[in-house]
Image (cartoon, rainbow, N blue to C red):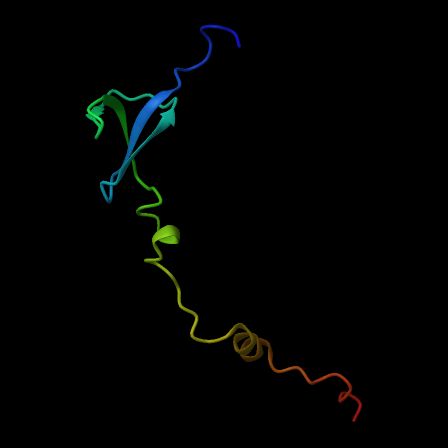
Length: 89
């Protein structure tokens, strides 16, 4: 790798703006904010809008429960098809 052209890859804390959940990982994200982590060290802090702690897919909070089965919904929308072999009778 060429020296001086790559961003600084360092430990960074990401915090979810909605839930306050935070996790420590490595990143090249730039920020002016810092936070003291559980281990006593100070790390750069990046506040993000959505993480797995607040996203509906991961939390299951915004799940659509399908009370009607797929086959029944198809039959209601497009009509029931006749079974094979009974078409010409």
